[in-house]
Amino acid sequence: MQDISLKYNFKFFRMKRSIFLLFAIVSVAVMIAISGCNRPETYTVIFNPNGGTGTMESQTFTEGEALALTRNAFTYEGYTFTGWNTVQGGSGASYTDQQTITATADMTLYAQWTSNGTNPTPAPTPGPQSTTGTLNGHDWVDLGLPSGTKWATCNVGASTPTDYGNYYAWGETTTKSLYTEDNYTYSSNPTTLPSSADAATANWGSGWRMPTVTEMQELIDNCTVTWTTQSGVNGQLFTGPNGNSIFLPAAGYRYYSEFYEASYYGLYWSSSLITDETVFAWDLSFDSGDYGVDGCYRYFGRSVRPVCVSQN
Image (cartoon, rainbow, N blue to C red; front, side, top):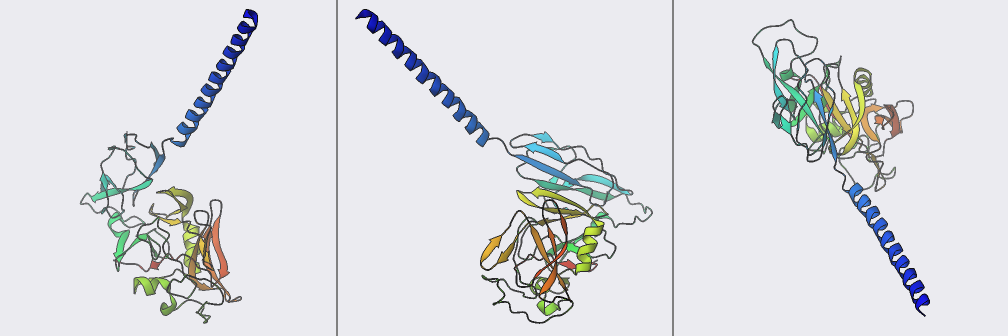
């Protein structure tokens, strides 16, 4: 009997040890999984010369980490660097050179400049104070494009550059719940939309309009285009010859009552008709790997990024 009991107890001990080891393994796996789920976020800070020259690498911050901003490496003839700001014109949050910060989101910091009181030889691009402005309460940016066209910082219907904003069928100036061929209301076929059928003019007022396909091509041809993420939103950053930039979110599109491809595709109406196939209009389209001008059925709901002419 004793031999049987000893054998039984030994088997029981081995069974308990196996259960304990299994529990330990499961516990470690759970802890690893939990650790992975709670991995700290990382944020990217982009440095924009705002009229200056030079290059600076983007800086990566880990959530909760206090880190000094990279020392300014930009220069501007006739101007002194005075710090950074989250808005090109200096109306946002300000930071000093090499200030220690704890980032909570992706952001772009624009160099701020003060004139030295001298009159340097005019540069081919305007100074910081003339490269941004406001028209009818909406901000514009001069990218240094050959035509002098200024691009808005936000989509129509958006309050920040990363907001998707509203969606419009080509030639319509209000949003709707259904985007189909049957309920498309604009029947004219102008080469370029008149102001009465321009969603930018109708919603933002005189001076603003939708860009032509030529202006969209100019944007592509003269800018460095970078797929990036700002404040958790995917999109393309267009950086002009003077170092200024605009961010176009990948806002997707509307068809019937559905919302498609947000965060994967950006699709922005031009004011230009495809004249040899008038059911289509030109648009600017992009994803993470490609960008260019393309055509689409006019009744689809697309984003609108306005432009304006040169402003003082």
